[in-house]
Image (cartoon, rainbow, N blue to C red; front, side, top):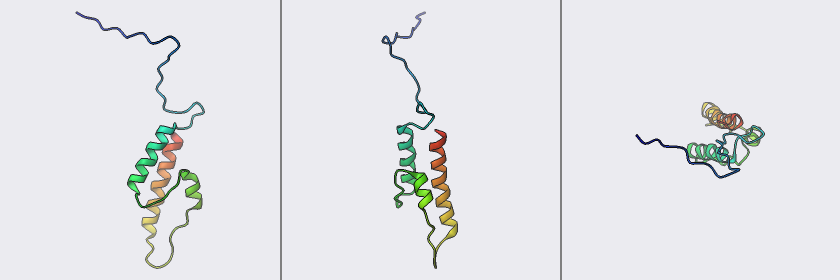
Length: 89
């Protein structure tokens, strides 16, 4: 019976799974993935890089033909993406 052993790592090299940055914030790769998913879900929207800033500046469309329910659903989608980034997963 053959036994497989783990190959030794290079001296000083540590393998870590990076989910969050050192200060608890999400890594750039995760943020980019969330933004890509959001862009796929909302292809016609220009959200910018900072979702918190977008949510602060956003003003719902008013006037005749404005769909308040669709507007709230849109905001909820952006809020959820912002919360995912803040949580880091």
